[in-house]
Image (cartoon, rainbow, N blue to C red):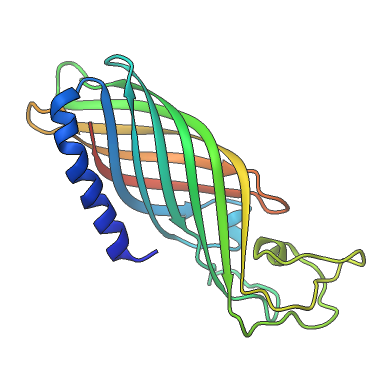
Length: 219
């Protein structure tokens, strides 16, 4: 996913949300942000640091409680600091998610511009692997978790199938939970937010675990 696409999407969503927010700011919830994704074990054994993009729209039940639907993209590039098996697959992996979340928030701490919130939820996580089309698993290669992570399968003798895999997608349910801080912009309903959230997706063989740290705007 290109940076141009992410920036354009964020600007478009913000432009569309602003007039809606002016009409029904107390009820409509919106957020959009970018940040850095840190993979955690076992994903950290195969993936390194990358970026993330998050956007969401929801409903403010009251001043403290909200329900938010979110889309997230996070990159999971090969971890160059980990030694893989010889001739291991090379390519890129992207994670996409659609989740429903509950958020509890305190918008003003001691009547200041600063606030804090917790958020948790779950939903659908899609891990898309794209492998060099010229890569072929060498014959009688012993199966290892790294091959399952990239989307290869093993036979009954625990050897990797000798085939070229161009791409592979895997869907799974997942959960998330995190903590965020907000700074109100002037006396408006707009806020700058900083958030760290743990995600766990129940993908086969190698679960997907990561900790995105996101910076953005919300109301």
